[in-house]
Image 1 (cartoon, rainbow, N blue to C red):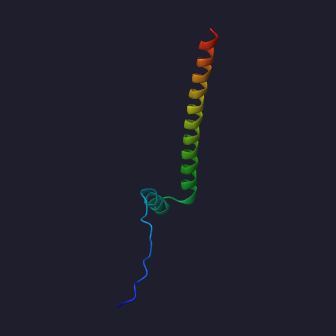
Image 2 (cartoon, rainbow, N blue to C red):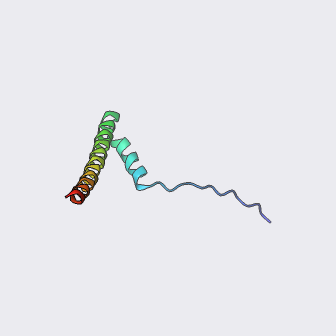
Length: 67
């Protein structure tokens, strides 16, 4: 009987990992940093817009109860 060969669990790279690899080949470090900072700003703006919408909904609900 042969000894079982060890199985290696290698994660399959995700699309995000593949895009980051391509990005690192095509762009220099300052460009990558600028792009990531811009994307972080977009996500933060979306979060703030969502929070404003929720706050407006709460204020309108309170206003309709008091009238």
